[in-house]
Image 1 (tube, rainbow, N blue to C red):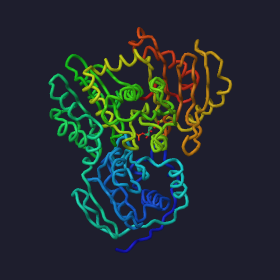
Image 2 (cartoon, rainbow, N blue to C red):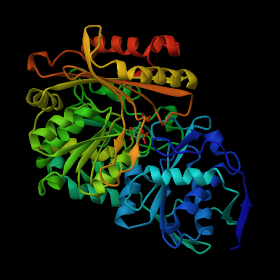
Image 3 (cartoon, rainbow, N blue to C red):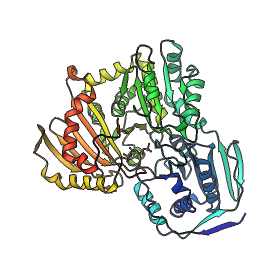
Image 4 (cartoon, rainbow, N blue to C red):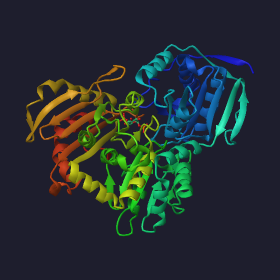
Length: 545
Ligand code: G16
């Protein structure tokens, strides 16, 4: 099969954001756009030639077309072996699992995560390195630099591969193996959790659960693991069929977009436990009856209870890490356990070195992501199984587990305000305005609160000393409250301003207030400090989580 060398010219703006390159489908469909980015991966990641590459995506619109393009280019660029999920499907944590299990040289994940998928919506591509994790900044930057100077790419003239049959086939000099997307991942979960205990919980008839796959990738994973392997009643998984448009929904597991699931937890007939995952299966939302567990609390509770879970009870926990805007609840647990706790910039890629070096066992982010050293991605179903295992051991409700945790460690009230599709210049101006006054803020009072520190977060990786700056403005108050301002690195329209708010309450008698009430003063301070309405024209956020 002859290799074709196609001429091309660079596209602007192919620098990966928080998690890969995310753009509108129409941008990806431009001739050469995807090809330029993929060739830049092959040009900079030399070990892929002669090696093995994992390819899969969340099934969104353009997934199958993109996989055919990538496979032809992989073969033309000398990749020896490609492992592809059946139907082009692989969840993000499953890609990580497969890369690690088969010791491949990397993987390509096709997803725009929680962003909607339709011809007029979002698509994305991300390269994961041989450790199974998202490429670190040095790698994404090298790929980006290559996209700015690219002049040709290599492909094959060949018919499409049948992605729907498992088994082996050949494309030029490359062997392709289509695998069941669930098997390897399910085996890993079985090794970590007490499946017998969880099965007994489902058999007890006193426990009910719903898992919302949001018509995205976790449908087949959750159906197989929960209903087939763990004997949860059929119907436990809802919206379980992955659809290219996610059923018209927004596959973001939060209180706003997973409202159908939230309503199933409400009132006397509400289920005991509910969970949802996102487009590519790496996020999770945990709910009890009439109860929402913040992702930050979930991380803290996971670390505090790891000794109860088979996969984590044999060894001492190495340490924990959270992204900077994530609440400090986990810091309190780490402190009690006498383990290290790291504060990293937003982006799962920043956990990779710490996990590889054995400095942390668990990590998580406020953006509905939790994970451990079992893979190098955050893992939605893993978090759900962890909670199921915990419920089976403790035989308590979700609310009781969380409230007891608060009594013991204090409660970090937490909320996030997102202002989506804001004018880019206005958002940049708002951040600059904040940065300009950072030096003058410490020691001043605003609406009765004294500012203790104000900075623009930077991070030096303790393993390779790589340095990342301008990672978000932090304003800390005496008493432990914090306001953080960041511009999202995953949006595809204008800019998204995120405002993260946290208040600490050690007194058990004051831990049952509503988050909205407790946060109201901080919300008002956040508005005043950043002049959000004046600068963006927005009176209200688009989404509150
Ligand atoms: C990605 C990253 C996460 C990050 C999240 C939000 O998640 O992997 O580490 O917290 O984006 O990022 P931002 O605040 O910049 O939008 P996902 O699930 O979208 O891949």
